[in-house]
Each structure stands twice: as structure tokens, then as C-alpha cells.
Length: 187
Image (cartoon, rainbow, N blue to C red; front, top):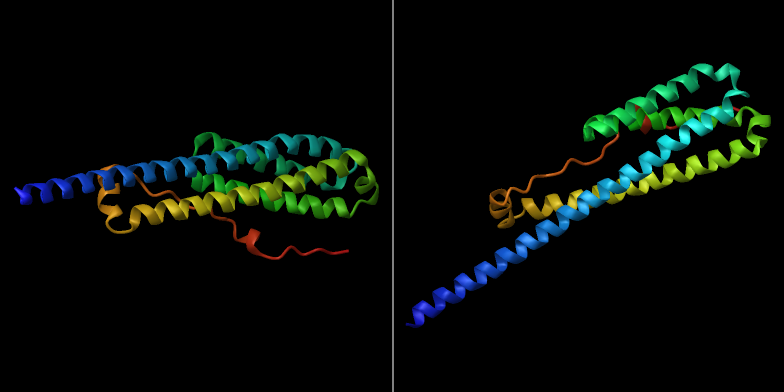
């Protein structure tokens, strides 16, 4: 009879442990999805801001026409990747767009009249703020991915996570090697 109680106690403990494991995985999974959503929000902000910046800058920067056109193309590519939901392609497209925006900021520095224009200055500040928020959102997302992936890869969680159909997330990584290089500023 006592053996039956011991077996029942072990089964009850195992059931509570599985419930706690499942709830923990669901919680981390939802936090990771929320972190990805935060990146989406900031990228949308960036994509909405770029046309305003380009419109304000176009009149002043006739010599930088190619750069402005390339930014517009990079923005379109990033928005397409975002709509497709492809993390790898989105990271690559956003890397290119970020590089182009860095070149634009350097070009604006070369035009004192443009830099003094209040609209352009405000948009550049907004763009800089948005870039900082995107970086923070990426770091937060990658932290959530790390926590979630660690949880589903450690023993004994890995045995049950597979049975419960939880899958690893990919980190948001910079694909473009040029984004890792130092920006050369010539005055």
C-alpha cells in the first residue's frame, strides 16, 4: 500500500513539474515573440521616417542623389523582408539600410546649410533616436532568444520541449560585414 502512495506521489510531482515546465516555456516563447514585435515597431518607425527625411534633404543634396535613391531602394527591400517575415533576410536588408543611413548622416555633416535647417536637424535627431531604439530592441530580442533557447536545450527540458513542439529561435544578427567596420569620417 505504501508503494502505491510513493508511486502516486512521484506521478503527482512529475505532473506538476511538467505543468510548470510547459507554463515556463509558453511564458518565454511569448516574451520572445513580444521582443520581435518591438523590433517590428521600431523598424516601422524607421521606415516611416525615411521618406520624410529624404524629402527634406533632396532640395539641398543634389550631388548625393545616388545615395538618396539607394536609401529608398534599401528601405523597400527591408519592408519587403519584414512583410515576408524572414528573419535572416530582414537582418540582411536592415543591415544595408543602416549602413546607408550612416552615410547619409555623414553627408548631412558636409552641408552646413542643410545641417542648420531645423526640419532636417529634427528628422536627423529622430532618426538617431530610432536607430538607438532599434539597437536596444535587437539586444532585448536576442536576450529573450538566448533565454528561451537555453531553456529548451537543457536537460531534462530538452526531452519534453521537443515533445511539446517548442522550436529554437534565430538570433537577430548583422549580415553585412560593412556594418561591423568603423565609419570613416572625413572633414
